[in-house]
Amino acid sequence: MGAWGHGSFENDDACDLVCDLTECTDLSMLEEALRAAINPDDYLEAPEAGRAVAAAEVVLALLGQPTDALAEEEELLAWVKARNQVPSATLLSLAQLAVQRVQADDCELRELKEESGSLDEWMAEVDRLRAGLRAAGGAAG
Image (cartoon, rainbow, N blue to C red; front, side, top):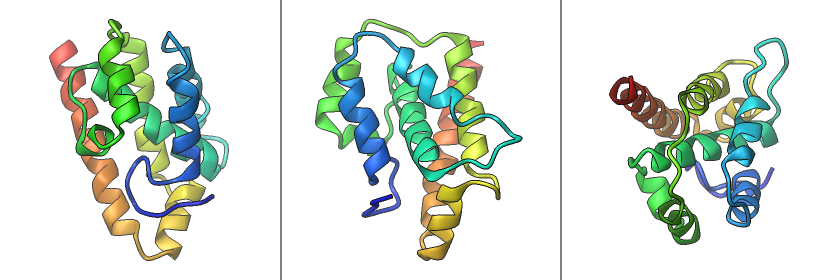
């Protein structure tokens, strides 16, 4: 995986998701990316984890709470603003589960961040995302 920072969109897999997503008109790709990351019995590979984090960022933005990381992605931010779609409670729940899953010890992306010395910064970013999703869940419920 090519990565150049600890942010949610600072890796090739997240960028691939963004590229693909901006060509879609619905939220099915987000659900697919999130579902690929939530099986607790499987080792979570870095590509799936990177895509899941990016997808969770988009879910939060669609709920009207874009993070600073997403706000820097101009094309994606425009795509979010152009959608008149609110994520379902199921999609929000999948985002919450996926973000929790990427922080687990058996996640390759987490391991790569640890090996590169950027685990603390990355975990702080993911913690902020997780808190935003949790707050959005409380507001939606």
